[in-house]
Image (tube, rainbow, N blue to C red; front, top):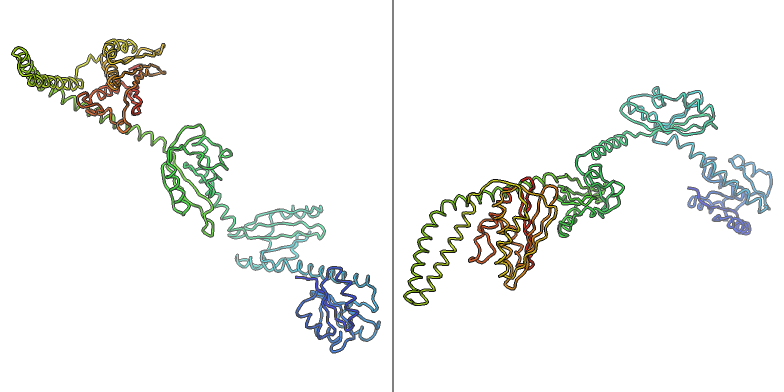
Length: 594
């Protein structure tokens, strides 16, 4: 690389200092020596771009210095010889050594500056030209030059080596020429200075050719580069990209912060977000809020460690609708093994999850129905066997009670008889409830007004509700349609739910509210109370036979099971919502058409 060092070799200090003063102003770094020997040592060490050399000096004069250096035109430095003797023998000797630049003493400072600048610029131009001239020869990529007549006037060694590797010789050099070479040469004739790109395939290799039209030299230069691996990689990427774009799975790529950089069309189809809407947003935008922060923390710790995470996510679409996906999230690494991105590949499993929920619901309903059926069959067989002896026992106890009254028997014994009679009544009520599972119904469906059924039951319950300080409110839908049901069964359901509501209300009193509404296909009855409520851990079990939250003496746990079975047989649904201490709401849904 060229520097700005100038070496002055002269035995007169005043000459050196004068030149130093003038040339340092021009930005040059001045080195100096008082004879040729010292100058030779500095020359070999510092490699100056210019040497200003006096001829007459002690120890080693300028001629001897030149004979040691043996300057050539291709050297990366220039030489100016100082002479105070005109055209003498020494000057002739310098000419013979190839030196043509002379500065006569005493010199003019402007002449000195001009000669220095000219010599340096000439050498720099020469060095650049030599570099450019050697460049095509040294280039490892094939370079070819074609003249206006179509003849190949130059090609470098890389052309020969490439052809040899492919099993060809220099006779096949025209393989590198583009098929439209005539059009290119025609453009050259019209002095069009431009560049073209062209791909050519030779054997199993693909080359990209950068074609330069150079009108000033009347040639076409073809710079060739082997892009086979690049093309194969490009094709591989194209196939991979096509596979991802057409994949039936959702594909999302994020940076290491979770910001989305790519989504495939399946993502857009599933989530309703267009790519331009979602790219740049954080992936948390899809969260439904159902998974705990602890799960997401575990997920993040695992994928940032390089491990894969698989999980079912309940995410939210742009519209707010929820969907299920089974996702696999893993890290993408660079060539050094550093994690640069994360990729999620997910399958939409919403339909599967809905089917599973329906299957679970159907299985639970079937199990519940089978339980009711089994209890019904059992109750039918035991009701008769139990009623007769219980009736006999109760009659005996009633007779004993009457005798105690007539004969004025001990009061403690009389109280024990009363307790026994009450227990017989409780057993009788249990048997009657059991018979509800198997009690014959009219089983005849008819179109009824649900308000009329509610009014009838309310009238029957009026006295007891009044005694218990329970206010019954009714809020009816004015446009409620008739529904097709088995009336006595629906009456049983309404009666049971009102009784349950009344029993849940404390002694100080409360309120029961019955509300009706309808949609296109169903009538819905809501029965709410201000009672004690149901603990959350029991909500899932209240429709099970024999399950009850009431004290043992008050409930058998069969009423809600019977109601649930009746409503399910009508194609409807019975649900409960409750918070302990804040009352309960039962919602009965009955199809209009039955």
